[in-house]
Amino acid sequence: MTEAVPAGPLLHVVLFEPEKAGNVGNVARTCAVLGAALHLIRPYGFHLSDREFRRAVMDYLEGVELHQHDSWTAFQASLPDSARVWAFSTHAQQYHTQAGFQRGDYLLLGPESRGLPTWLREPLPTLKLPQPGGGRSLNLSVAAGVAAFEAARQIEGW
Image 1: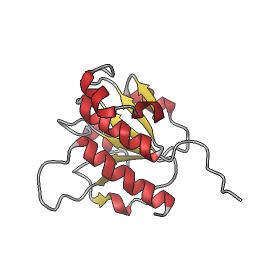
Image 2 (image 1 turned 180 degrees about the horizontal axis):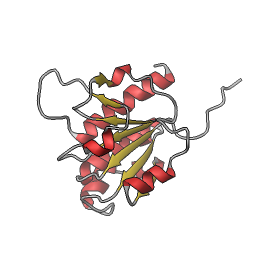
Image 3 (image 1 turned 90 degrees about the vertical axis):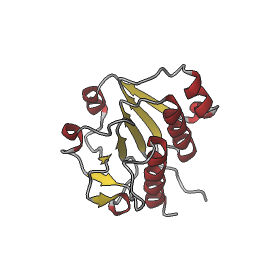
């Protein structure tokens, strides 16, 4: 007997105003292999037809449930009432490993050059990734991958 697979994506990765085509392409590949949906909130610093995006995403875009939102407000309006949105920021106090992720959670990451604005992250539960070596922040696609794989690990029990 096979176990029923729950409907809907394992989780949702949300990029607020992403700036770099290559990073978004890499995040899309991560979403494809995890069975996660990808949400992009405008404005973007590139076009989805950009060569750099296509090179990074390769042929994985076909396997991604891609949602594009014209604004933060439009994204919020698309959320189901039960949605849990986790913001990621170097300003957070709690590590991502302490979150207790659940199927269908939304992982929100900000633009490469500035991260999530205070007004957006303050009302949300906010998590950080460890950076024991210092530095301002991780690359967006690396941060999204670390966050998404930890969420998937918790959800799937790997």
